[in-house]
Length: 122
Image 1 (cartoon, rainbow, N blue to C red):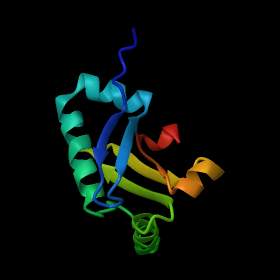
Image 2 (tube, rainbow, N blue to C red):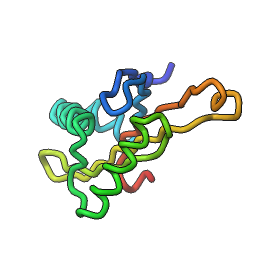
Image 3 (cartoon, one colour):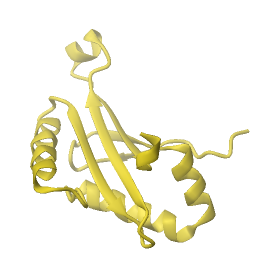
Image 4 (tube, rainbow, N blue to C red):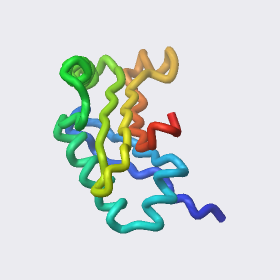
């Protein structure tokens, strides 16, 4: 039996659709060993959902805002945010919204994943 939690699903205000949140092995391990880290991740998810992209330069923020608008319109796209934990560890949140195949496109069904990862896991 795996000690890794199953992906979490929630509704994102950015897309108004179900989002599958996937945490990498490193993030899962850190959350299992530190309640503070787990709290940091929860706060990052809240910030991401509000369109706060964290520690990015203005060009990346503008690109994320444009991509988030396209995602909200149902066109798919990707958004990457960068945050720091209470003890200054960098964590990325990367949302990818896309059609899996032609049948999904015809049905208008987007796949929506939000991955929580350390930059070294990219």
